[in-house]
Length: 81
Image (cartoon, rainbow, N blue to C red; front, side, top):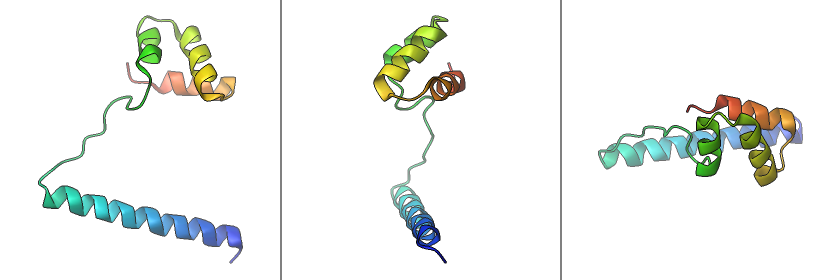
């Protein structure tokens, strides 16, 4: 097994352990997890998308994250607004 494969395997194991720990904590505290729509998306980007200003939202997202045009467009298109 290559170092790369070992690193990936180790990461999978660590993520699985974290998931088990979170599930345990939620259960012991009587809580449920519900993923928030668009969690972590800056409100100004959401506002632009809601106003139908997708190009401006893409531009702002690119400025904030330094991602490429394709990635920014895919991200903006994936938002649930």
